[in-house]
Amino acid sequence: MSPHHYLAQVDHQGDMNKRMPNDYNETYMRVVKEKPGVEIIRKEPEEFYKAYEEADITKAKKLAEKWMEEAIGVKAAKSEIVKTARAYLAFDAMREKYNCNAVSKQEAFRLSARIIPIY
Image 1 (tube, helix red, strand yellow):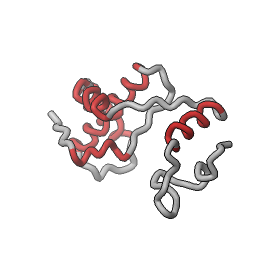
Image 2 (cartoon, helix red, strand yellow; image 1 turned 30 degrees about the vertical axis):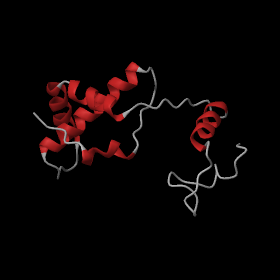
Image 3 (tube, one colour; image 1 turned 90 degrees about the horizontal axis):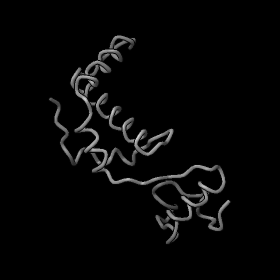
Image 4 (spheres, one colour; image 1 turned 135 degrees about the vertical axis):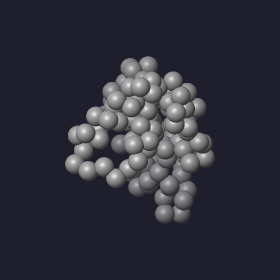
């Protein structure tokens, strides 16, 4: 699939010696687009943060309520579930903006380094 023998042998952290080919990311994205036909579009975390801030808090609260009603049991605080619903709405807005059928994140955008308030 790839001219680099590393491509099939590494995880996101690199090979067992923690070395990645210089053009690993470019090659990976090209091969994934060529073979299974999946195009990866990278965006900066700040775009997600903006979408999160713009997410409708009323919709997020309604979505959180729906999730809690449908759940077998809820152990998380409601405020945390609302934050998750808001993130869901932010990812959905980005999915629609870029006309894609899936959205993923890398290491939660290191959310622990950024405080996202709940109103």
